[in-house]
Amino acid sequence: MKVDVRIIAATHQNLELRVQEGKFREDLFHRLNVIRVHLPPLRERREDIPRLARYFLQVAAKELGVEAKNLHPETETALTRLPWPGNVRSWKTPAAG
Image (cartoon, rainbow, N blue to C red; front, top):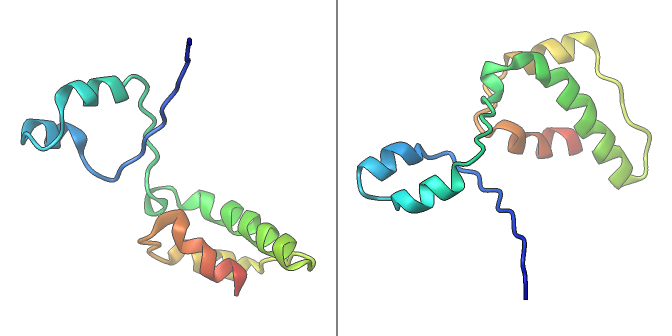
């Protein structure tokens, strides 16, 4: 049986450092590191926050069967000033509330 598999992996760990420390297999690192996509945290790309807020409001509204709310510009500004330590995972609660 012929199989064609693609693996997408994500981590918050520095795998290069883990390899140097002997805590992650070097061969596995090189197999996984064929195409690297670096996605900076929200605190480094605050310009994306209003768009993400609108998206998650639309998702929450669809799940609840209601019309999506619009964000006031002051609310967008306030959201961009938050630290968002959980990045996109932090959106679930505010968007649904």
